[in-house]
Length: 578
Image (tube, rainbow, N blue to C red; front, side):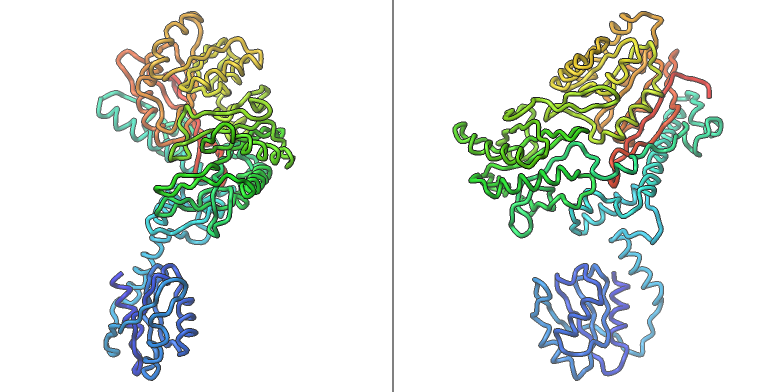
């Protein structure tokens, strides 16, 4: 800033007999002042009397003795510190006798600007998730490159207990947010909503400003906070040295070339999956087929990505994405890959190829899928049941904490002898875990393949009281709800569990749930507490002659240690008294 520059000019010229220079280079950006000063002294072969630089600057104000000035300029001007040329210009020194005003204030302003850009936190301070996200946004805006470890595990620098505190605070803020939003809406329409008032918080022992009680966070067990992901997707490409690498994208160049870094240091990738990356890397190196070149205007090559799923017993399903090859050449691609996977003793029980000729590695939904080895499905146990999972099926990526989340959802839902609506049911995991405790489960899922998997999983586990419908929940639920409720009789309680994608529930789904008067409880599992707020407001807004839902309990669930992602479970009931 101007204040820091003014201070620099003053600092570098207040002694008589000194000459001030403005020394600049792109190589100076984000390099500490001490390092630049050392390089200048070593390269210029003169004593540096004064040096001032803020870390983010690409320049420094430097003073040397008058007798050394010419030699300094000659030695430094045109040199390169790393890759870019260094330029030396005359500094704009102020008269040595002039008094600097507000020296401390100017220095504080420079430090504040530096902290704002770097988003560094004082030692011992536990930031909020918002602080972390703002820091990452600032780094991105300043084009500060981060390692794959920093990008994939931004909370790793804090102890796990501190991470849990951050996520508890995040969910507490989400509850305050929807309480505030609901209060504003009801005041606008004139409806009394007791749960938004302060005395309600006191009665239910909720934090100040929160409309419901908040349980202690459900964390991942300490022995499972590393290697916890049962599904990982890796990109096949080259690292910064141009060598074959299988891992995560480090950065994308201006020509759209992706630079890949190893996953070896990433804590949530299991040892078996790291070994898989090494095996595939060796296969690619020996392969006659090139890596897919993602550069703009090129788009040629074959090897693209590899995805792995791992069961609790170590069995692994592997799917390699490739650009299409003529059918007669495909065995030359497949045979060495499968042989290497089996020889590595990774417990690979299933291998698929996904053909993708699109520009993006995100394949279109109907991209051809070829089963080339082993079983068609991976069997994953969960809460006493077995689930068969395909390469494209959705399944929670953290087994251990998923079980804890489902246990809490089941406890709050109280589904005994009730009709359970499982909205956005995926492959039926939550609904089928509940089926043993209720009269009937009705699941609704957008993806037909997932819906078919849900039916197969029901049959696999001998569950006969579960029905699954494929289609958009906003279209299917209003159509089937009346008939399904009628089928269990007027005296049967109806409860619902919803687990929507990040945008939340469609307005028609919310209306159908709100208008079904037999529906007494809703357990909302949210991967995005921010979109949850809008849905809660819509479900809890009273209608004429209608009991509205009331938030009763909330809990944060840490399914993804070391990341900023946080799940939240919320119980809502029809207008109970506290």
